[in-house]
Image: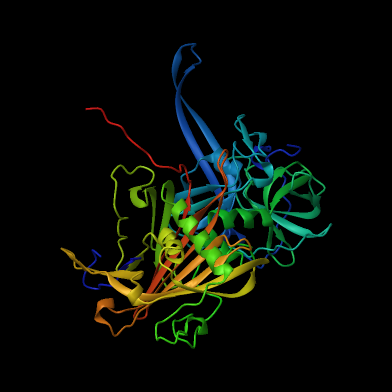
Length: 539
């Protein structure tokens, strides 16, 4: 039975290259005058700086060795990716060159890198400190997720339109000044020149003087008329700048933060990871599905022969459930309510052995846990192992009621859609409302009916499964909860010397308690092993 922990609000208890990297350019800058903006870009673009002190021994003026302190500083630029400015985008080479732990005083919670030395397109690139860093220049992107949003900062909209030759843009960044630590936001007017052979966008400066803008890497290129972001600056010469296209950023964000991509790139090609089914509820009555009307004259109910498409879905769903019985991954969690930003964040390493999952806090946790720790909030919802139980429920074992709906086109992809329904008597769906009274908790699993949709590609490989529990605020066992649903998405994992396989990508669980909607969302990353482990211990 699928159980999700549902925690009601308790007011009385709180227990509950041809171009040099811009960061490596010369330190002096020839700055054209700023033009008037309708946006305050100081609330969008942020400086990224790191300073490292290393003790050493150096010969003094007397010729004798003495203590010395070497200073290594890294400079770059970033910008707010989302409206609340909890995600900062920049270049990969800035992220690796600065190694900063804070941005404008806020701690970095997680880092996402679009490329690296293992990238198949990686080439050697020089950093300001003289080191050589291999990465793919066309994917020179990184994202910092902060613990808390930057106050008084916000994101900007993006443009996916193709640029025209001569189109006027403005480049915003924090170049190093004559005195390196002193930096200010600067705008560099430019025009679009052409796409490069390496997949970047080239721009010519609108200035007769040489432009030197070291430290501006990770800044933004903005269309002058619409003030929409068209690229992310990642390299310069004295007469030209290059940038990573926004389309590459869309692909990167959709991969590492699909919930964020859904909000800031609504026209992206990713499948929706949030509850939004395509068809009305599928139910068990004859009005909903005439196929399931009793037809035998002896009064016994008889389910007609299923279509080949439904039979194939069952076999594919069972294969997916069976393939996820052994693996290790990192599972991230975000808890919140309503339309607010997450109120709590966490990461766990999830280890699934023979279908049973165990957790440890990531990356430093030592203790193995049967369940993740509750967030310190007055109300929350926690997911269960829906990623494996939902496909198993639709598979060949339980003979759940399933029908095929008309195909649809979702983000330019043809999808097959199947609907399912399970009654309380099927004993397949349920949840666990929990009251935290401080010194003890009260909880009891409750059976429910449920329904949902399964989206597949044209080969009937499962891409998304939703589940909606049928709750009633009149039943005391539900403890006031009126709605609960979950969505899990799947995608292909490709690893060397291993066959492609479907794995869970994202999960989203929410529930409504009175007027309050609580949610938990997250994703799976860093898959490492598949297969059982056997440990032999000698006496």
